[in-house]
Amino acid sequence: MKNGWQVILKKRLVLGLFGLALMGLGPNSWGDDAAKVPCGSKETGLSDCAEVKKRSIELVGARAKEFVESWYDGEVFDEGICCITKNRFNSFEPEIEKSHHGESCGEWSRLKHRIRRKKKRVDVLITVDARNQAGSRERAYMAGVKVQMMDSLLAEISKEIESGAISVGVCREALKDFNGVTKDMEGGLKSFSEQVKTANTREVLNKCDPETQSKLTAQNENDDSLGLKSERLGMQACRLLAVRAASEAMFQQIAMCELNARVDDAYDRFLLNVSDPVLMKRLDQWAKACKGCGADIGCANRCYQGHFLDYLRGETKKRTSIGASEG
Image 1 (cartoon, rainbow, N blue to C red):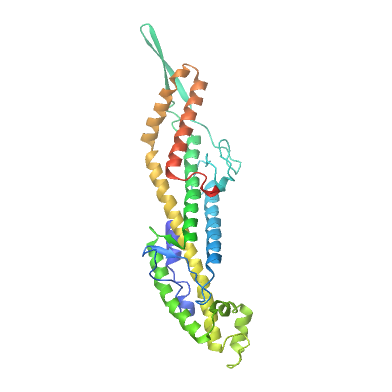
Image 2: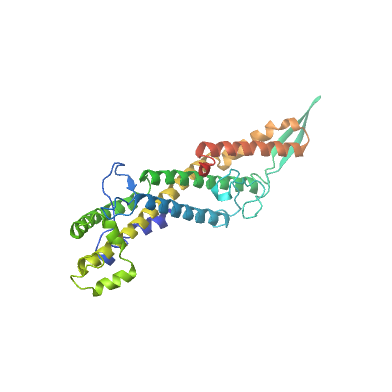
C-alpha cells in the first residue's frame, strides 16, 4: 500500500498536459515537513478553505473505509478480523463473537490441566494446550487492533487537515513533489489575477466549465460577456482551474499516504509486543493466574479469556485513542 501511494504521488499530474505546475504553497508556518491545504481567499483564485478541508476529510475517510473493508474481506489477514473496541468502521459495536460482516471471530486457545502429586499435596497445573497455541480468535482480535489504529489516526489526520496542514513523515518524496510543482502555480495565479483586474479571481476561474471552455475557443478577442477579456486569458483560466483541482487531489493523496504510513508503523510496533515468544509467555502467565479454578477447565478458559481481553484493550488504549471518531 505504501509504495502504491508513493508511486501515484510522484507523477506530476498536470505538468505535461497543460505546461503548468501543480499548485503548491511553498514554505509555510508549518515548516518544511508539512503539506498545506491548497486553498486561499477569493482574490487569489484558490478554492475556499472550508470547502477544500471538508472535501478532503470526507474523501480520506471514504478511502480509509475502503482499506478497512478490504481487511475484513481477507486481503490482508487470512484468518479473520474482529475489533473488540468501538469505532466508526464497526458502527461503534465491539466485535466480540462476530465481525460486522457476520463472520465468526474464531476459536479461543484451549487450556489444559495436569495433576501433579507431591506426597500429601495435589497441585492442578493449568497451561495452554501447545497443540493449539494462540487460537484463531486471539489472532482475529489482534488484527482488529489495526482497525482501531485506523480510526484513531484518521481522526488525527482529519484534525490536521482542519488546522490547515498535514505533518508529513514517511511520505516526504510526495511532499517534495507537491511543494515543488505548486510554487509555479502561485505565480500563474498572481499573473492571471493582475490581468483580469478583479477582486474575485476565484469567480472568474469558476466560469470555466466544459461548455464555457468551448465557447472561449470561438470567442471574439474583445467580447467580455464571460468576464474574460480574451481567448488567451479564457484558456489560461481553464488550465488554472484544472490544475487547481489536480492540486487538491494530490493533497488528498498525500493525506492518505501519510495515514497508511502511520497506521502501518503503529501496528508494526504493536506486533513487536505480541510476537509469538512474548505472547506465549503471557498466555502461560494468565493460565497460571487462573489456578484458582482447580480442575474446572471451563472456569479456567473463561478466566484466561478475560485476562486476554483486558490485556488487548490495555495495549490498544496505549497506542490509540479508543472511540476517536466519536469526538
